[in-house]
Length: 230
Image 1: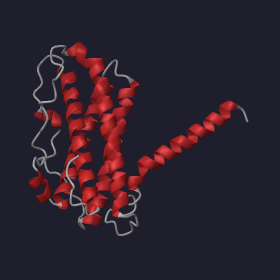
Image 2: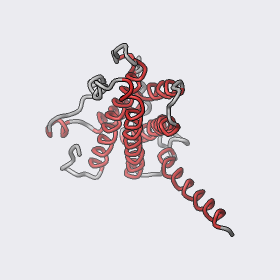
Image 3: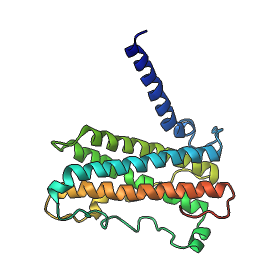
Image 4: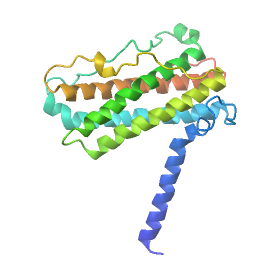
């Protein structure tokens, strides 16, 4: 067997392993969103959801950085910080004190996570459509945004399974889920670039919130009385 064949085999094994890891959070939800036939423990489901959230946050950071390097210096050299102050900061309230953290319930955490996840599904799809119209958008940026969109939907299904197992609840759908771009007032200069940059910036912030809430929830499930944001 030549070296090329050996390399192809190992690449195939690696891709299968990665796909298995990223797809594992949906093993239960594919069969039954009520969790009735889900034999995976809450702890393992939380671990898988956190893995998804960590990867989504990491890729969102990479996508935002890549977009900034490619388009922001050309479009708005005097506004490098644009986007950070245009996010919907009131979408989900973030507890700011130890007392607040102790008072919030597991139900609040799960509902907040689901609200954030559901809110961003449509804006990420809109972002993909927008980037497809760019003349010089790198393939790596396009693939990252598609990946985030797919994994966010996977994470939504995983959160629904967690809700069914922890809270004995089903789906929670947002009403009037408007695109985030409707809440952004961009200047006339390079409006589309600014709007897309804002979407990436705000999504990265909310992806970090999702990861943090999931980690706090996992800490609580282990009966750790010292749980806090980290």
